[in-house]
Image (cartoon, rainbow, N blue to C red):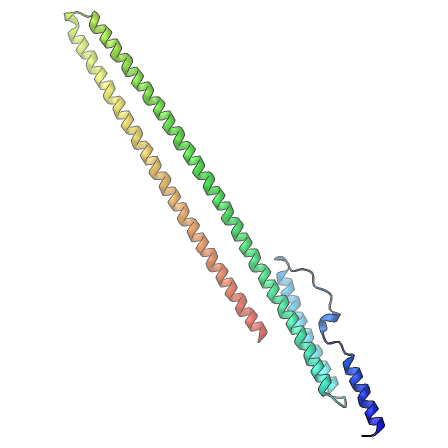
Length: 238
């Protein structure tokens, strides 16, 4: 090899060494990816990959015209590969951000449902307590009236003569009827309270089944979305 050829080869290697090794060096820095910009980021990644392929084909054609094309072609391939890795990283980050956003939204909804469920339970407990308190007061009032009536009857018996026995018996029968009605009212109140309790239990069971269904549905949707994301990422790497 003569001196002229050696100098030409040395200049060629210096020129190859000065070529940028990454397309990302000339790219505008991408802002942080958010759930609102994830789709745009993936479009940017696809555009980067397409641009890298176009540049590689152009540089490949230019390398074929040079005296030594091995190092030139290797550098072009490396630039294309690095741009592809950067595009894959952007796509992966966009999918990750969207998954995290969905998880966060799901967690917030579950927290709100839990708070609402506790509030409903507290309201139902307060309503049941108020009902029991009112019912106890009504029972006390009925008992007081019954005692007053019994005292009145006893007073009348002391004053009444033999000729008023029929009237006293009629009064006693009315008092017994009032007592029977009071007992029936207590029994009806207990039955109403039990029906209310059973209704509340059914409502809570229905709401729990609904929450369980919604949770499972969200979980299946999240799993499906994650699987689709993995398949998309796998397809993108092919």
